[in-house]
Image (cartoon, rainbow, N blue to C red):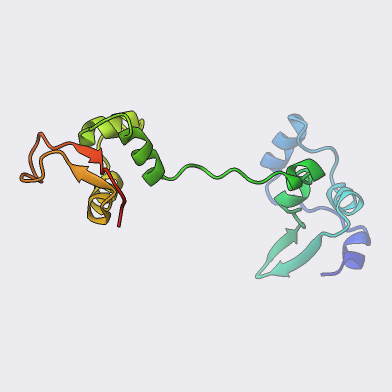
Amino acid sequence: MSIADIRQGNVSRRRNPLVAELFRRIQMVEAWGRGMPLILANAPAVEFRKTAGLFISSFARPSYRDDMPSPSKESESRPESRPESLESRVLRVLQNGPLSKAELSQKLGQKTVSGTLNQLVRSLVTSGKVAYTLPEKPNSRLQKYKLKKGPTP
């Protein structure tokens, strides 16, 4: 169906007169037969097609990027700040003294000890950056972690 076919002035056919009259009474319909001219006037890039007895209209939707302000020269010249990694945060917190995993988690602002924190502490112990306070009992409930003194391998 082309735009020329639509512009030729077809008369609207109401499929459900009760619903159509209700829409007119609550002023959701301005006048019968005004829809297509209004659409064509306000959305020139509209596409119409008829498929399996259905009339389909497609409108071009602008990208959300079109609505976003362009970055200014100031923001381009400044280096982007990166969030501090969990590893560096753990090492910084441990500088104040030995802490258990629960205490460490609390200092980092977590409610519970996460799996990520468990893995990180294990890898820090393996890499030699962090040491156990009870090395002979690595699985003790009283175990705490401290920064290892001296050069790290």
